Length: 176
Image (cartoon, rainbow, N blue to C red; front, side, top):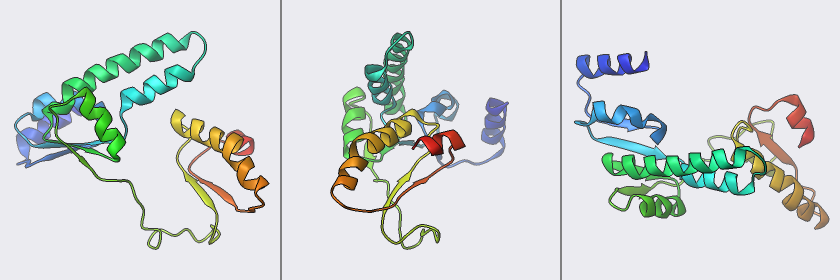
């Protein structure tokens, strides 16, 4: 259904450029080959999978390792075919440039204007973690923060509040 809608758009609209939110949409690149495509790379997805596989135990580890290799193959294939790849850090740019050395990259760091996006229910001072626990690296980060970092903060005498912004099941909220 999505492919059909995309083909209809290409036929009926005078598209000038395409912004693609990730390489997960790379299957559309061949039908958009005549247009300049900018692809936002929020991570080096193959590296995220490699990291996940390295910390896993059990039967799923080989599967995730295979997925990491397949994802890297896709990054190598598709990154050079878009006009520009936008990464959020120099580390990500270097990682993808190693995988796809002929691709073009620019770094546009993540950022938030904290004056414009201030939540009224959050204290003036404190620590805020923003991210959905549905993405494994966010869960890993929160677990690491809770087990390794927060105890150091608490033992230093700092009484800072911690706020997790993002949807989470009640059981997960209680755990963290």
